[in-house]
Image (cartoon, rainbow, N blue to C red):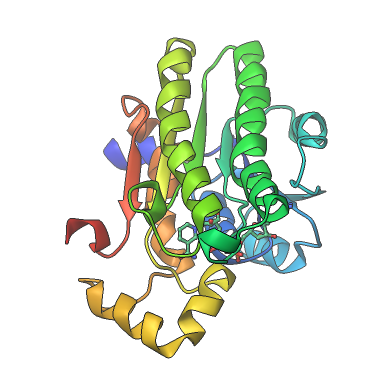
Length: 253
Ligand code: NAD
């Protein structure tokens, strides 16, 4: 039956940036759909662990700093050691540093590109190797942005990295579909999380943004839940290399 294809019972999901915001919401969604969840974060994921458990799930906390690719192999290993396998990778961790492009420092540029782009690629590679070893395919869901499509203002490195995610998602989907690995992405619109705190506190920019969103509100972590479960499940078996916008209609305008 169709709803059964959305179920993730017996699957193991790894979500980066699991301690807060969209990552936390996606952990809860995957647990509700039946997956065991490994949450990767720099700091404790206690709140997420509680939420996952309250939703009937099992949770593994993996402490790792994704400002370099150094912890990548360990993340796969800790997941497999605990749960015996890996089936779903959600590359959610990301940073944004705002500054006029004319003054943007090389240090800030490298920080953003490293976490949002380089580490994402090496996580995809490491998990794809694990999926190939297991021989049953797997799912990768990257988190893109409206700035995968648009230029943005005062966030040149973020825009470059999120535009790269859209292309990388296509590139990896092409190479790995033959292994039954689906690589797709979700492009959130303007969501009320830490990532947009600064933006939301600027009354003028905040008003301009809200006025342009057809749905008339900022998005929430709950808004990501349907898309992440779909792209993590066999319901999306023939969806490859696509980025789904969850944006209240922002891109449609
Ligand atoms: P957030 O700032 O609350 O979450 C970012 C997450 O990434 C946090 O869990 C943080 O701990 C983690 N992270 C950052 N640097 C890390 C590092 N070095 N090592 C380990 N973890 C690290 O904001 P969010 O909105 O929940 O962002 C989640 C994702 O969604 C990000 O990739 C962000 O770019 C993307 N996104 C957010 C919006 C939005 O409007 N909020 C829009 C489009 C895309």
